[in-house]
Length: 194
Image (cartoon, rainbow, N blue to C red; front, side, top):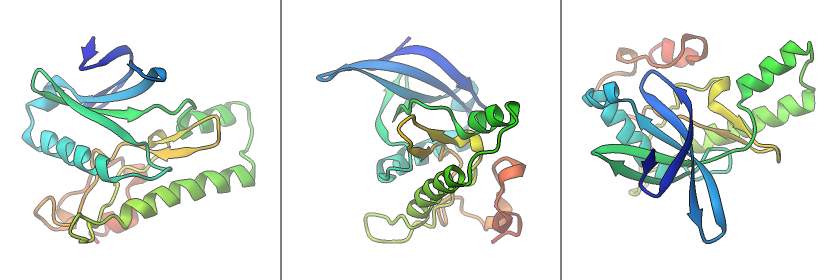
């Protein structure tokens, strides 16, 4: 399947709202591997999910930090928006932790601290993000979990999936009215409605 100039290699995952593909495209430097995120056909019919996806696209242009996976491009295919992100060549943190557990190993303190430092650096950048008019956006990721933390073989860590992120005032209600994310990784502040 082709999406614009991108040729899909394989489908990596299907979530509750979106499909994730690994794809390639030709550049002046050669062939580049990227990740493409596209709403499922069922999600396309849901106006709220489409709005959240469009918000993720808008945020993707602003979230320019080494510890957040960069959005490279976006496009439309048959009326469906897709987002293109950089590809990190390592496992996600969930896979890394599962493999350590399988081998009955603990991650060394220095490695754990370095991973956590990079995750927090990316989150801090997102939390401090400002609009073009210098207004604080009040961005909260709402789905920080080990599957949404990518690693690369050169030691870089990057957050992904701002698909259910919340910006101050976006949803039109109070924070306590809308709780999203996986229960095991929902922030205590969100559960308290703060």
